[in-house]
Length: 102
Image (cartoon, rainbow, N blue to C red):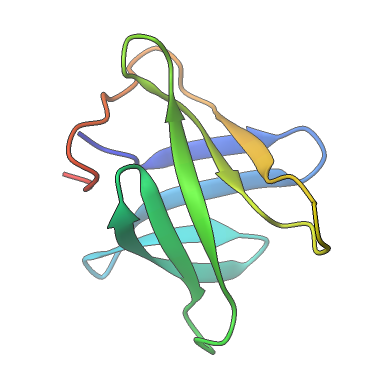
């Protein structure tokens, strides 16, 4: 199972999840975040350069268990909802299995 791929938001652009030097990573707006598994379909995104910016991201599945999107709390402020980025490649969606990319 793999969470790697390209995810898009109409207003906020593109997130790419891939392996960089063997580490699951997220690229967004020129920044690289290291992704560490938390539980289930959640990961902790940490800015690779500083380790001071951290936030959780979650992967969502459809009724068949296929990964269709990810959500991340990019908007500051109390009560702000996480933004949802839709997976770009819908033809061969991987199934979520054990919370790890493989």
